[in-house]
Image (cartoon, rainbow, N blue to C red):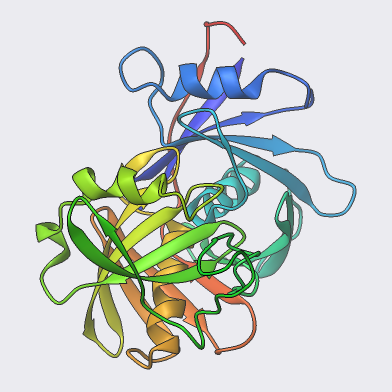
Length: 288
């Protein structure tokens, strides 16, 4: 099986062009993403044919679970499709991608003598409890971040105020005043991910606002662990911060692997920009 390795701000993926949707992709994801016995990656990207968009995408986390959305994965998939000539058209253009969270679009801007600039739409954020999903109070359906930000849970004796956002996948954003490097993410991340209020688990973002246009963040990614970057996580941080009137509509999210740009007008789609680079290609010789 041929594969490509790509990364966006250190968030890395193994990409396979797939025509057989019935393979055991969960098993392959666990094997190929292993950083000692496999290629090593945060997730497995499948590039699929689509009847409703230019290309299709599925993504499986390193633990084999399927994710609904992935902003960095989207940009890496589009970069691969451009490099391979799988999407047509010259100059600036738009590419549509079918995902299990819906059809997403990517704006491609060619730069003379350089790599294309790719900005993807992650769709509009959602805030209802059943959309995230999260179950608190008397049951699912009672929480809306716009009216009830900073829902508090206690894990390992520490209180965390969580702001819930769905970017097609679940996010819980916790704002801190200390540098994010000081937060015990490796200890608390898995406890929040598997907390009883999240029926499908959650991603956890730790964020510190540096200015109206800049936030530093770390991400504990559901099914992966701490990652160097997370596109949908960066979007969730920017959305939560904007709703709390901490930042402006365009903001740079500084993650350990690099900087991602997020733009949101407060009601419509969220747009994510940042690097997407091919690292190497190869042939997988293990079981598929």
